[in-house]
Length: 67
Image 1 (cartoon, rainbow, N blue to C red):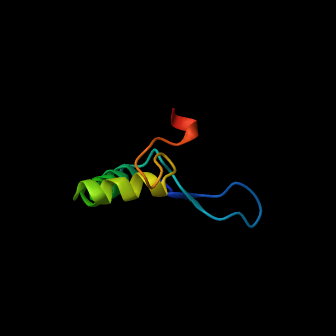
Image 2 (cartoon, rainbow, N blue to C red; image 1 turned 180 degrees about the vertical axis):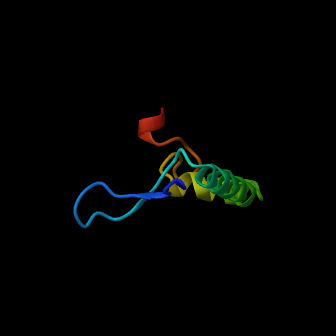
Image 3 (spheres, one colour; image 1 turned 120 degrees about the horizontal axis):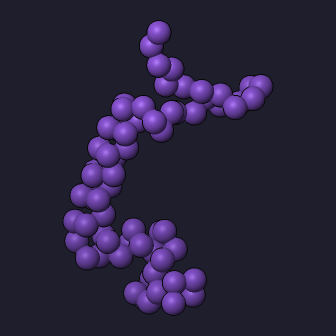
């Protein structure tokens, strides 16, 4: 029997990917690599990503939670 990639956790729950599957791991690694490549294109772009994540302020200082 083939492994099921999608699982549900209750009635009418949205299907979830199985993080133990090889496909999930492969797709996650690919997505992480693409994100890293885009986020590190330039210092300005990297700062924008960190600001969007709430790690840095627009002025380039760490936010209160990261000091």
